[in-house]
Image 1 (tube, rainbow, N blue to C red):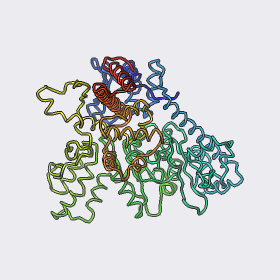
Image 2: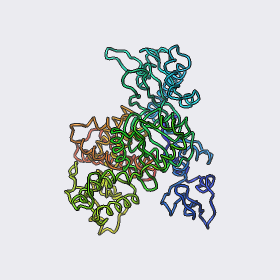
Image 3: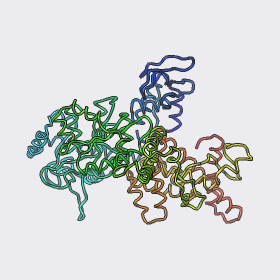
Image 4: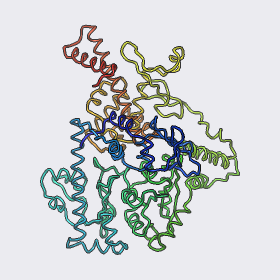
Length: 628
């Protein structure tokens, strides 16, 4: 069924399910008074420090600090997708999952469903061509030459796109509607003179699957000397190259709880490793590894090994990937770096030495911390005072990117040992002017995210204030200005959206209309971005930023896009929805104030009066606990 799951239903569901029952079905728990205790599944321990509190509906580990609800447990422990986790809990509670089915949501979901369907049809056709096409021999010979068996090819859905420019559309039935769907799915490319042609021609095809096993795009390896050697699907409403990984779904099917997962560079590396008995490998899709890639892998395993060729290009790629890995380095996870012998790739090496020897290499891969400091100190003599200063200068900006507090502290301790400087001196932010606010409010403290210090106050008509923030004599002095509170809330939502453009999928048309009247430039900018993403679903963050190049807003958006996400998964979605709800109320309040001013001045039209009364009634429903 189309539409997003209402937050009210999720709240009701969490109230109904017994968190101890959900977790107790997966772990051994023992009663301890009103609570339950057990060994934490998220870190190794011998003494139980994992507590489940049924009457409050949450769990908490006093060893590693992990905590959450029954829903977050399914997301993190069972590694389910959000919708799957909600449906699992709903089945346990005997409830049916409702969906909000606004016209916009229905259209977007219908469109996405059509793309999934046409991609699945294309996937089946490509696999059929590998078995039946008259020219399949070259593709079969290539795969056999790489040591692949028929069973492996079937498991990964490997297929063949035969030569020719008009095969796919004809094979799937033709027609203008189908042609448009194939264009939108990235399977056809548009001709400048009109019409279309097959994007994948005379190539071996590798279907790329999402977390639910649905085909979302393809990679194609050319047969012969054509260019490019590997071709990927373009960005589409269902395929985002910077967030997807080849082989992730197959890895999850093969291993429920791997100790580590390997990030490699190519499709054949993933397939060859799996055939040899190392199924815990995934590949970035022709791009450098991103923080989003690593966050996905950390949901699968606590350790990620970055695997690179030992040549110059591989070492340069490793350094870039290591720096990006810092953005995803939370407490409880680790990253290692593995360089292969010259002239070898994972596929060829595992074929030569076998899975056991290859796993021994993985176990000896260099820790990210060791690799990082080795690279940073390259060319420096840490016995020389000036070089120790240079090392500290090089390292501090990188260490500040680490979100995990414990691992960041340990990194600083290592840097302190190498430089003979106290940790406090290294962690102190360098003296520099505070960044100037792009919207004209007071500057933010140096080193803080753009939304730091946001207060949870709301100022309505007539100066009505929201929840108390402390004694009256201190609130006025400690609380940021009203405009800054509202702008910081919008900035936070903007930062989330720039890192996760898919958050726009669940935003209704009424919110877009409300944000057009937002009282801050940041709120209006948020409304613009959401409107763009509604008109162009699947647009990447870089493409979104590209639309603002040369404008006053570009630098601000770029700054927000770099801000680290405070959390992921359902918590991020909930926070984003709550921010939008606040901003929509603020926008409606500002609109009412403007209309009231016109009415009092005698300048209001009949339409203004009707709009004011509508907004007033809606506000009364919200403020009085009614429904909208």
